[in-house]
Amino acid sequence: MATIITSFGCRLNAHEAEIIRRKSDEAGLAAQAGDTIIFNTCAVTAEAVRQAGQAIRKARRDRPGARIIVTGCAAQTTPEMFAAMAEVDLVLGNEDKLHRQSYRQFADFGVNRQEKLRVGNIMDVRENAPHMIALLEGKTRAFVQVQNGCDHRCTFCIIPYGRGPSRSVPPGAVVEQIKQLCAGGHREVVLTGVDLTSYGPDLPGGIRLGRLVGAILRNVPELARLRLSSIDSIEIDEELQELLIHEKRLMPHLHLSLQSGDNIILKRMKRRHLREQALQFCHELQARRPEMIFGADLIAGFPTETEEMFENTRRLIADCRLTYLHIFPFSPRAGTPAARMPQLARTLVKNRAAALRREAAKAYQNHLQSLLGSEQILLMEQNGQGRCENYAPAALQEPAPAAPKKEKTPQNQNNSAGELVRCRIIAHNGDRLIAERLAGAA
Image (cartoon, rainbow, N blue to C red):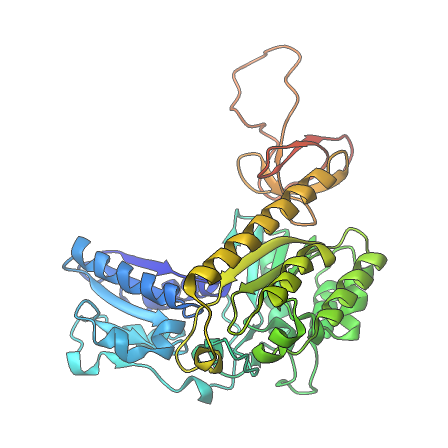
């Protein structure tokens, strides 16, 4: 009948949902009688795990005859919890979910309830297969997974135990995939991974992310835009930094894994950078490429965080000129060192997260305001919406026709997905920019 896939959490999970769809279809799951519901879970916070359980129970109530498969990071890190749920028919590990045979064995719905737990040791995985699927956004932007896993052990993070060791897709396979995407009409590619700046050391020759980015730009000249997903600034290699400064097809927007702005908390998190290094990175890059914009992840209420330490994190938003922020209230994860540290009251944690979100909202408004009057290149997506090179969302406002000639749709017919449009920013509505088209090629 139908295979329904629900993904929680990060962009990589959304990418892998498409791999799950293809592999389960190849196994014949969709051809079986009755629906199959696959939950691709997230383990980054306790709340994410709770939401997955809640969604599973609701799915069973709504579709009592459906088969329910649970996979993803939460299934990898706490498999027994999901296996114990009466609503669940099969639990697959994070590596198992990417292979056709995992679903073929289940396609006949004859799974033995004693064998419903199929979760391998993720730490034994040493390769990252170049799955030739990309998550498409608006038919213009594709997300290509080039790295998986993490070798670091930040004290708050459970993800290495859900994703396994760092492993990279060989550059040739990445370049080939991006060529195929460009041939299919995609104008922008985003490189993704669990720890993207750890790309390469596991490959022959120990290459770095900068070399991969350079190979893509050289060998795929038809690619209009290349972006990087979340990165660790302290791990950026010299070749990548030079490309970020000089290569105009490498977009001027970076999302940084900063987590805190206080050195003591950074050390207790077991991060690899200090506050001063984050400031130096942002200031140097913006000095050499002024249009560069930064987003960041920040955690509020980490164990032992004092008011002064929190204030250092709050000030980091302005000091690094951060724009797009993901704010997380600290969530203790069983099995991590931070869960054993002295905890702050949950009310205090939530209040500090709310304060950071208010600062983030002001920073975003200031960013939109700063772009008024500027010229930008929009990559059009759908319904007259697009993204600037700095990732700011914008709506293209077309001038009214001089005289009505014939009935038209509300959106200009020329606003096709994938079109690059040169425009001027004339306003913003607090959420996105408003742009008018300028004459001439983008």
